[in-house]
Each structure stands twice: as C-alpha cells, then as structure tokens.
Image (tube, rainbow, N blue to C red; front, side, top):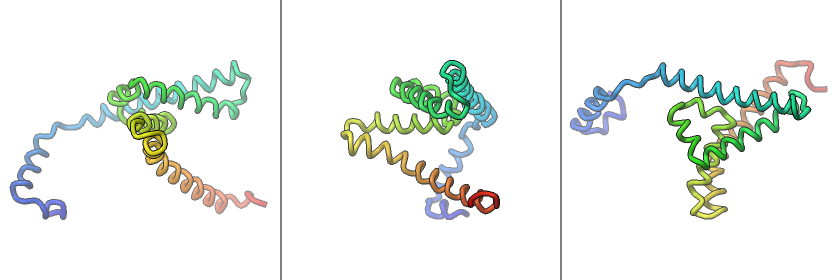
Length: 158
C-alpha cells in the first residue's frame, strides 16, 4: 500500500478505486497528434514570418530571428487578450506550449487575470511569478550547456 493510501479511510480508498475504474480513458494518441500538428503549425507560421523578413525586409537568416520572435510574441499576446489562444489551446493541447508563444500566452494570461490588483503587485507580480522560474531555469541550463561546450570543445577559448 502506498503512503498516499495509508492516510485514507477504507471508504475513501474504496471511492478512489471506484473513481479510477470509471474514469474514461484518455485519448493519448489523439492528444499527441493534435499537439504535434498544432505545435508544428505554430513553428511553420514562425518560419513563414522569418522568410518574409528575409525576402522583403532584406534581413539575413540570422538577423531575421529576433523580429520573428517579436512578431510571434505579439500575435500570441493579441490572441490571448481576445480569448482566442485559450480556445486553440483547449483543442490543441500541449502543442500550443511551443516555447515562445506558450510563454507569451502564460505571461499575458497572468497579467490579464490579475490586472484588478494593480500594475505593480497584480500585473507585474503575478506575471513574473510565471516568468521567474522559466528565466532561472533557462539561465542555469544555458550555463550548464556553456560549461559542457567549453569542456568538450578544446579549441574554444584563448
């Protein structure tokens, strides 16, 4: 018996088993396919935007990256503020968590939800409650990758 079930009364354990037996199966394959298609579509849109910057804006491939990310963030924030992004996410699932658009959606959602609490404590505080762990993890991961690159690439450095 697991430690979770030890604290439950026999009636609670029975109810938990009954609920588990009657829970409908999750459509894992369908969810994976929708996530793949929606995430791929977001990436395809990003690639199309980048190509437009290259073709019509005169950017190099490397230079087109930053404005492409900015446009994706703006699109995500606008769709979030109109309530469209959440509807897409309910249908598509994890595919909408593609890093740039998913992160922008989570930041905008937190800001919108807590705007009644004020700009600093509401919008700023709650928005960065989401952003903080992502920024910290990203910084730590980048540091670790940089150290590993430095260790395994002897030609790097001076």
